[in-house]
Length: 107
Image (cartoon, rainbow, N blue to C red; front, side, top):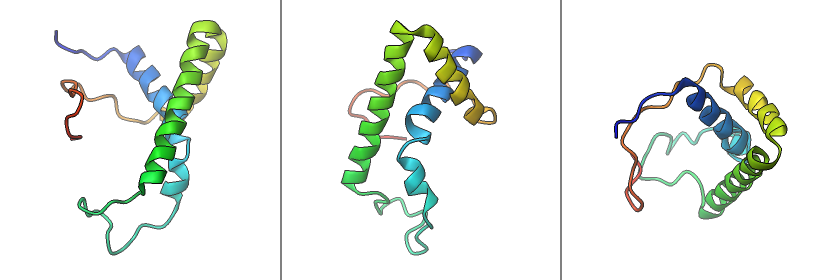
């Protein structure tokens, strides 16, 4: 099956990312100054394992809360999406690449 762009779904995806990830602890990491010695170097880790764990737990918690609202309080879910959309008005649409299989490397 060929994946196609659904503008409404793309807007929802971007809003969820803003609410669950972008507006979470990653903002604190992003707010710091870049390291002049390692900036842009792919072979150097830029965050610790503990920071990564914190980022992922925060994103899972936020997505769970949002998906819970979607199922049990659709009006509140739509209100949250409206907030998320305000952050993403100028974000690019999703790239329509083939989904990665579990265990594959990130692109």
